[in-house]
Each structure stands twice: as structure tokens, then as C-alpha cells.
Length: 290
Image (cartoon, rainbow, N blue to C red; front, side):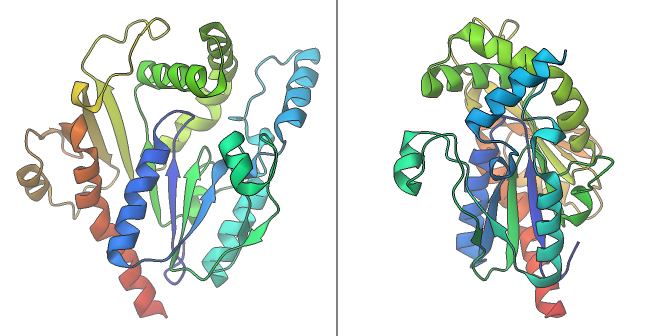
């Protein structure tokens, strides 16, 4: 952690909605005139798409059918921790981009499934990470200790599966059966590497549908925000002005002393109200340390 060069880490699994949360942070950064350097977790995959396919086949031949991008060994977490540590000390570092599709290929001039060259950060006030492993702790790395603000984005599991099925069918041309296979292969790594991170966060945002999602593999539609509630859990509720939040977010209520429940369509408002003061606190700490 660093007063002078703070780090914000957004952690969530594939299809959880971290990209939408990133857009809300970008709005706050623009409004408050905060210059952020950005890291995408996919940039630290250890293998490009072709090499990962070969690695998965190799692991299957060795009797391990569950090697996925959720696994720490499939990612360069040591490099990511070095960059977190360097940024906390000096405010400098580097990143790259994993090219997902043809649109990004046109933007970056690299084929889908490959990486762009490494590039140095522009001068910035803070570092913003969004991806799978922002709070990961293993025998080799401890990324959570470097982040000054740790946010979990956690839909309930059936909603997460529905979102992934619809996204992968629409954008990647996968069949439902193919997505089911991916989900099943990921489950051990999800349990061992993704879920524990949500106990290391400062705040979790969890979307819970209020419609039937009992069989996510036949769901015709993704539950909308209007068909959801949002459970917001604070690891340390001290200093959180819950009466103010309840007065500003209509139809919200406290479910536990450290948790507030708000309508799903109030995600943007809730995050703006909760996160803006925390970001400004980081900037004030940075100003005092400079």
C-alpha cells in the first residue's frame, strides 16, 4: 500500500460485470480530475490463445482436465505483483493488452488472441486494476497487500453463468454446450483462486436476481437491473454513513450491520456515492505525502 502512489483493484470472475464497474470509475476519475493508469488482468495471462489451447491439451494428457485462466499458474502473477510494488514505490510501471476480438485487432494492429507490446504508464495519480486476480494470494504472491482499495464484483453464481452463456454465444459464437464445458472445467479453479479473494476486499457489490434463474442453461434472457437487487458488503463499516446512503438511495435497506441492499438499477448511483469519497481520501493522502 502506498500513500503517494495508491492502487485500486477491482476483482471479479469472467462475465461478472467488472467492465461496467470500470466505466463508473472512469466517470468518477473524469469528474474529480484524477489521472489513472489502467491495467487489465487479461494482459497478464501467461499464454496467448494458441499457446493456452496447447497447454490445456497438455494438462489434459497429464490427467488434469481443469486447467483454466482462473488458475494462478496460467497467469504471470509474479510480474503483476512486481508492477504493483514498483508503482507503489515510484508511480511507474508497464502493461500490455490482450487482444480479444476483431474490433480490438483493428484498434491495436495485432491478431485476436495475442498480446500487444509492453508499454510504460503515462504519469498518473493512481493505478487501477480490473481483472481476475487483483486480490490473489498464493504461496508465491500476495497481490492484495499492495492495493489501497479492493473492490469485489460478485454476481450470484447462476446469474454469472447466464451472463457468460449469453456473452460467449453472442460475441464468440460458442454453443451452450461449449460454454457449459468451460464452466465445468473452471469450477475447481474458481473455488480455489477466485472465491477466496472476496474475503480480502474492502467492499463487495453482489447482484442478486429476483426472478427465476434456477436453470441458467435454458434462460432466454439475462435478468435486467430492474429484476435484481444489489447487496453491498463493507468489510469495515466504521465511518460509512449508512443513514445518508439510505436517504439518497430510495427503496434501500440494511440487511446486516455491514451490508446495505439497493435496487439493481441503482448500481451507478450507489457506486458514485460510496466510492467518490474513498477516491478523494486517497487523493488527499497522496497530496499530503507528496
